[in-house]
Each structure stands twice: as C-alpha cells, then as structure tokens.
Length: 247
Image (tube, rainbow, N blue to C red; front, side):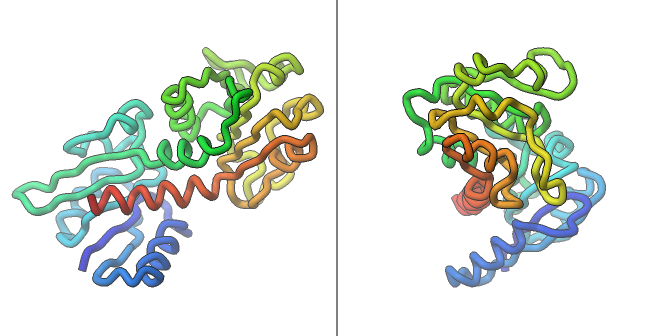
C-alpha cells in the first residue's frame, strides 16, 4: 500500500484528502491511501517518514512550507525561487530517505492564468505581499509580465491601496488578489481599489475559491472585466503533486 498525505498544523479540514480519496476511487487507483498528519514542528516530518516506510509523497501546508526546507535532499527551481515548498517526493529505497521539494502553487497558477491572457494584458497589480504572493510573482516573472505590489501598510517596493489611480488601472490590466479578503467568513471584504475605472479589458484573478465568487470578482465583473477564482489552480496543483509522486 502506497501512502501519501498532508503535513501541517492544525489540519481541521483538508481539500487534499477529499481530492485524493475521490481520485483514487474514481480512477480505480488501487493500493493507495491519503492521510492527514498534523505535526506541530517541521522536524517531526523525519520521524513521520521513518515510522511510515510506505510514505511516498506529502503535501505541505502552513506553518511548515518554509521550515521543511532544511530537511530536504533537493529542491526544485520554482520552490527555491519562491522560498516555499508545498510538495515533497519521498524515496525510501536506500539507507536514508531522499526528499525532493517542489512548489506546485506556481504550476497551478501559471496553467490557470495563461489561457486567459490577451494582447492587452501587459502588466499586473498584485494585491497583498504574503506567502501566496511569492508564487504569483515567480510566475509573472517567468511570463515576463511586469507587476506592482499593492499593500495596506507601507513596505519597500510596493504601493498603498490609496495610491491606485485610474491611470495605474489603465496601465495594469491584470489584477490578482493574493489576500484572504473576501474569503469565508469575511464575505463582504475586498481589496479597496476604485472599481469604477475597471473595463472589459481587465482580468481579475482571485486566489480565493470559497466562496466561488468573492466580492472582488463580483465588483470587477460588474465593470465587464473577465474574472477567475482560485479553484482551478487548486485542482491543478493537486494533480501536479500526483504527477511528481509518480514520475
């Protein structure tokens, strides 16, 4: 029996367990199971692997996306550049387990964004500058799309929401929300920008997927903008994990 799973703390609910359990059943994938492994400290991962010789791959969620890195044998370019790992392949066939870290968020975001891009989508605004923004920045750099980061409180190399003008929105036709604004239960919250200046040339992408249409997307859609939530990104990054574990 091959075992896969998710490490993080706490793990009260998990998209990953539901996704993989349904995948195994639907695709009739035998001798595989997906478990939740709530561990408080990243170093506990090594004990977990030692105690579970059938463990072939794990997903990583908060608070361990950075802290697992010192325990890895190898790390791929995306994870290295982003500075966060959310997928680890495990080979336990030798004396010591070989652990390689990946960041599948970048893959999921890139593959869900690229089909939406048009000629006029030349520059982007990124709302928020936390962990989720790192994968977005990496992808935009790979696609050679210049971006501006927009934040609530002053930080280097970013502008404030209050500085977002009609001129800035006219120049930046891709808008990406990487903050939890609009996520359950805070349904009424949204990035505070002048939505009246959005047009049908704009693309609004929200990493939030619960609810399916956060207020940010509703307000952009009202201006005729193209919209996209983070659900496809979530599915793509999960499928990417499966590909990594089996390649």
